[in-house]
Length: 433
Ligand SMILES: C[S@@+](CC[C@H](N)C(=O)[O-])C[C@H]1O[C@@H](n2cnc3c(N)ncnc32)[C@H](O)[C@@H]1O
Image (cartoon, rainbow, N blue to C red; front, side, top):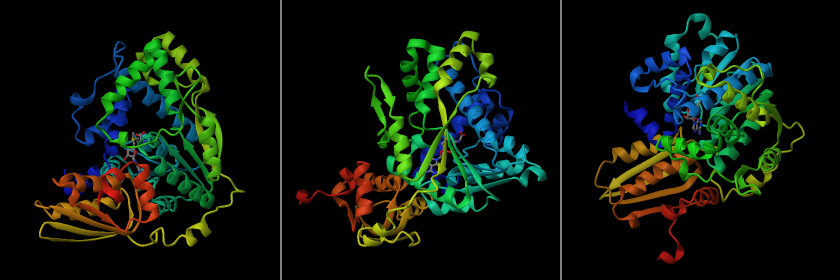
């Protein structure tokens, strides 16, 4: 693995989850998924497990992924827009399906994925297909990167999201929706979010194939995926509540109200239609298929549009609080020095998945033998979980944690650090002396 790729994955390991999705689609007999895996150098034998009717771990997960893939593709097509912003695209074979339909396809993801995926697709497409396809490095918390992708679009856009929001913190999810509203207000179009009802479609599949053991098997399968990302660091469960019977449920009204308060309107489009056929139906019994159809009746993809009457507040607030946030327009910059084991660094601008590898590079280049770390964040405007991850790598590298000091923490950064629980590492308590 080259150095840049290694740094990119370290700051945001969630890119690994896209490979898992691809493997699952290969298992569901999507030939293009298999071809992409082969181009990535993944040995077919090592990943392709086939789908066995008795397999209660891999089979339901594979069905979930195919169901999501088929449902979102159909909803994109029905939206009628000519440009698809696939956010995040992962290593999806969707690119071929939409380019062949003559749609403009703009695949967006983190650098670790785009740097890999874009040359692979380049090598698999002819001149005619290439005319329809482009890729853009995007961190959904970074508006400028999203705007660069939207600027490639020739008209109004259909932004489609599957398999993203579970990897974001609540703050990152808020940023995503604010950025989406800005893009939709400028370009027109809609955002198809297949993630809001993730819990429902998982349960619909697991109940169809495992009945009363659905929850137990779902938990077992999630354990198998741990290690691909560190989302357990995140506190992204604000909308998960217990219903009157004590079972887990999601408060969808609350989520919808939150979108509305951010200038986004929600329409719910049924996830599954009677005539949808999954390739994995051949690995399911008639009874399971009927149950799945029944269970899916109440599950939706959320079709979200910008509220034309929404008045953005906060412009004035932001101007008035210039002392408590660093200037968000400052370009990202890291300055560092190493003297007598003390690594001193100052960070300017937004530290997210796109920019954080730069800090990690400075730190790694400083080499072994660091005994103290001082970080000046007074000009840091924002830090996403990728940035926090790099800070944590630095913190953990010290034997004596008292040697870690962060100074100039402005209010915006403090709030993020506190809500993610990282204050226990990075912020010294007053009475600690
Ligand atoms: C489970 S994959 C899904 C990919 C694709 N939608 C699919 O179904 O194959 C999750 C993807 O989210 C991307 N991702 C995670 N955090 C992101 C962020 N902040 N901005 C953009 N993409 C992100 C990861 O790189 C990864 O490719």
